Length: 172
Image (tube, rainbow, N blue to C red; front, side, top):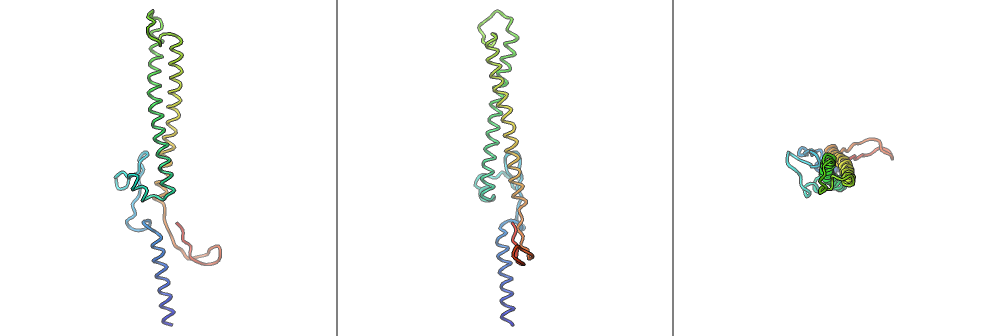
């Protein structure tokens, strides 16, 4: 009888230690949340670098983070370039329309062809600007989902009904 109780006690202790070991850093007192600010992730107010993120996030979340961060940076580049091109072209078109009545033909934006060229360039800048903003928003929202996924992960071990009867159900 003593051997049965001792073996039952050891099985329960080993099962609880194994379940605790599977929890990793989630569920223990030291688990810290990740906060998303724009396209950057912070923990305790300090920005996390790539090496820290690779150690904290799961492989899938880290890969998704790198893709989302690249999308956000690409969107920022498109928005910046598109904004500069659009602004320069708009100033040239307005200046060309205003100066069109002058006799001086030395400035190309003064001619109707110049106005058309800079108008087309303004349209290209507007398209770049319009394409960049959704890229930034989509990238940042994906990063927010990754941080939320990391913060919401909880591992539980329950005893109850399973697909094949009664047993332990480990959910993470």
